[in-house]
Length: 299
Image (cartoon, rainbow, N blue to C red; front, side):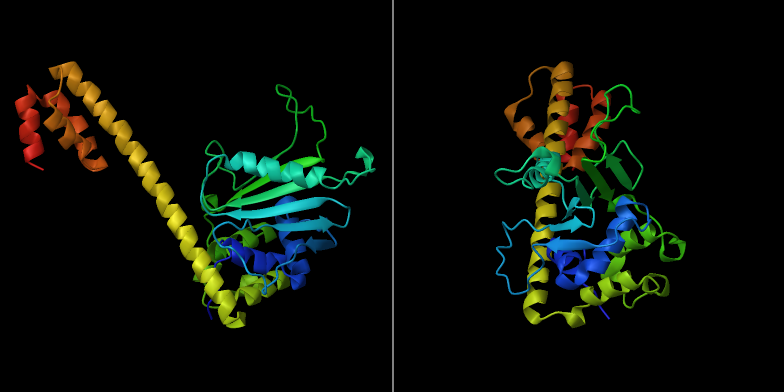
């Protein structure tokens, strides 16, 4: 038995945003937003997953939207790789969902609260060790002084921070985050996940055996595109590190030996990050440019 990766946004949409996903989404949101308490009793999924849709995989923004039984709007997004201005996009999507409730002639009291649940497969909040972080409006210096506390809420779930194994899962929240992180690696439905009927249903929806060839092709292509995007980000980060390391090395060399010949500069600019780090450690032992030239020849 094999399962698609729920971290792929198209798969996430199928699992949590299908017509038959209401109970799945209720359980998931109760786990993430309310710590497992059964606060949400019912909801309506907006723009539900439609397997017949023709998706432009490069440009389509896939999320799950729902209206809860109390009228609150929830926007749920799965993001596997960081991107420029990601935090601004999250804020934009939340405020857009909040503002778009009103049509012409309607008034502010008719607005319902809005919640953005953003799940990331990368570390977003390096200052916090918590897997789930929740934000509301509060006074800048007095944390206990809040306003519009329930009107606009941001909730971030950072999957890489979750390190529990299957035997360590205790809460409903644990089990749902484990599902997101590990479902693609499972070969069967584990007993302690299957005892939650909504997670069992989610795994059945994620089963490759229950997908059409067209769906599987789209998920596969989407997965490859996301891997490519991750690769580009990693490459850009690596290039940035190399650029910074070269600039530092050149400053150190100029301080010690004056202007560096162009040929030597070009050799240094072609070094890997590992070689640059080694060179940084060796510079203080060089007595002159000849030592640098000999070091470069020894690579």
